[in-house]
Amino acid sequence: MTETPADALTIKLPAGFDVLADDEQLAGKVSDALDAVEAKLLASLSSSDKLANSAARYLAEAGGKRIRPLLTILSSQLGAQAGDDIRDDVLQAAVVMEMTHLATLYHDDVMDSAPLRRGAPSAHEVWGNSVAILIGDLILARASQLMTHLGDEGSRIQAETFERLVMGQMHETVGPAEGEDPYEHYLSVIRDKTGSLVAAAARLGAFFGGSGEETAMLLQEYGEAVGVAFQLADDVIDLAADGATSGKTPGTDLREAVPTLPVLLLRRAADAGDPAATEALALVDADLSSDEALAEAVAAVVAHPVTQESWDVARSWSAKAKAAIEPLPDSTVKRALLSFADAVVDRQG
Image 1 (tube, rainbow, N blue to C red):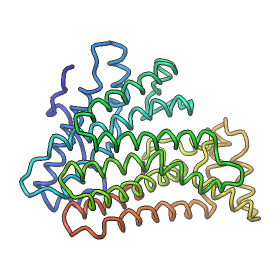
Image 2 (image 1 turned 90 degrees about the horizontal axis):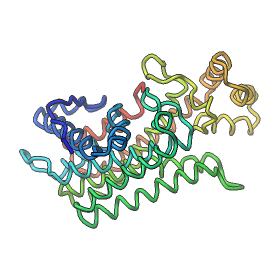
Image 3 (image 1 turned 90 degrees about the vertical axis):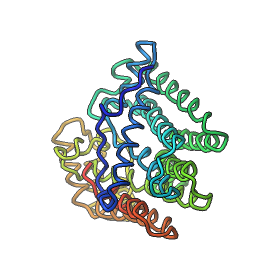
């Protein structure tokens, strides 16, 4: 495998981390670490087999926010001394977290029949369902191999996290059980599907960065709440964001009949006798194959109070994340983490 040189990559810190400007040394260290993670990520996905090489690197090369590696790196700095280099174990854990995330994307897109991922045709659209599933398995196998070099604790956390990811996908696939509240079911699904891996990323960063177990557990709680807030915000962005800014076609989830927070709240309101919700729901449940019908349904949901209610729910999870790390002493890293908890909600895409 040939490692991509770090100086050939440019990684920008996501919005919400402007507070790192308070500490130029830390900002540079984090940026350099993200460059190193990107190089290691592509190297770890590379293969002498032509098909495996191109398919496994496909989604990584398409881009991504790299939220999980960023949280791993930042969390590691809570236990670091000024001037300390970021440990190799931290970088390795960050790579494993992103690889695990990538593996789930290959599987999710097959199960959801998603035609696009990150603005490009999904892997299953290029190579077919069977190859896409196998590539997801291959990436997970590579991630597991890397984690074995980091000791039993890291391997245990990754295994437990992947179990939650699988259970979350299964529960999403079968839907809520009879008598189960669809809203509570959905929150449980995204805690497992999204929150668990973000939580693991933050916890492993603190662990390999040298923080104590108490700090690592606070970061795990923080990470899970951030992950839930991020996904809930995505639900609203799918409806309310400017497509030119977000890069997403408004209402994609509606067209694909994906149950998201605004629609779940809309159904709850309709069941409670809200006539406006009932009218909007009729548009949502209609044939949305035409752009005109989709636009009308999107407008009806956005105009209903459930959209603002959805933002409020997302921000409540952001607040939970910030509350989780309140016991930590003040530092540039803590302020960056607090800022990021806001940024995952206050974004356009």
